[in-house]
View 1 (spheres, rainbow, N blue to C red):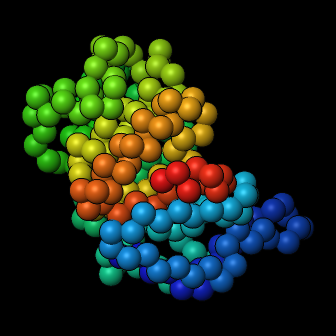
View 2: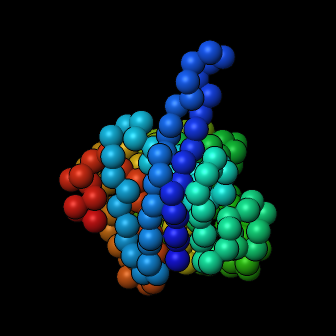
Length: 201
């Protein structure tokens, strides 16, 4: 499903300083149906690798294919992919329900109001569905993001440090939702610097 070979990414580090190697000959092979943990300390290049898989960064060298294609922004390939960043940036004037419905609609699939309400209840946000995102906690915003992912039913889901900053109860609920999505056939790529977090999933 995802293949990367000898991926190298260099970032500028000032005018006269040598470039930073964010990735250096990185290779990976992720199969359909995997729940894959990409582990490493902060600054190891995990997010950079994910941006390469998503086509947001073009490597300086090496090759990446996702579903057998080179990831290029705007490709129909992205109809099968969902991404939840560590710090999602939403339109904060939207309510939880409006946000879940709006962001799901970007996949150009028909989603009924009933299904939106069912998913919002499933992720534990029913009582906050009318609350503006500007007043939501980080955990509530993360749950709204996973609600969108569940509605769109992606074949491939990328998650960047999804439980960072969540309290233990909310983190457990979040893990349970991920396992449910994986049980329905989604391939999940999860970035984390915490081995214990990956082990629980």
